[in-house]
Amino acid sequence: MFIVTCVKTTLSAFFYRIGGMSKAEAAKYFPWWPQCLVKSWVRDIGCSFLTVSWAMCLPAIAWWRFILALILTYLALTTYWDKSDNKWKDAFCRKFNWRYPEDNFYLHGLFIGIAYMPISFTWLALGRAVVLSVFMGVLCHVLKWAFFKNVFTQEYGRGGAIIVTLPITL
Image (cartoon, rainbow, N blue to C red; front, side, top):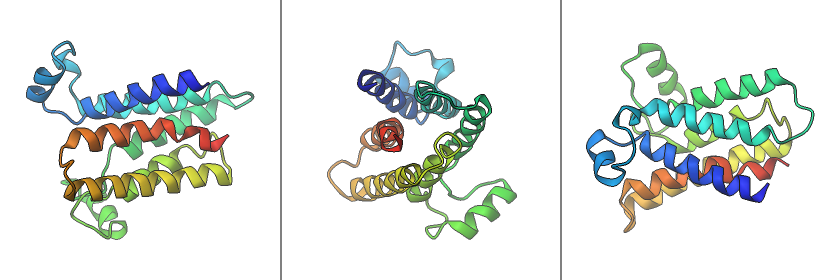
């Protein structure tokens, strides 16, 4: 399970970053990666699939719980809880995001963690959601002002944290 977690953590960090890059950045840093796959949905689907597939190694979990967790993780990855052109999404974000209209990585991490709850509905899974929330929020808040102003570090960290925190739920 350790090797699987390491491989999926690396892939998740990569998908999270490639999904946030521009085509010009991707061509510069990852020339071997197809330009047609430099899209935000690569992050959303790739990280969601890796999260749920990690749990498929666990015994006796109903198939519908994997599907529900996949959908919820996908939805959680599609927003940073910031200002949106979609009036429904924007109204929802205004209610919950105390940092509105800025990105709120605390909420982003919390809801990614909560999205895993259909697979592991335990206090440990809730603890993972809190760990993701604090880690993503503090990582981005600290790195925004520290010498690591580069978005690579932030996105690799957030993407990797999604998988590397999964063992907390065991």
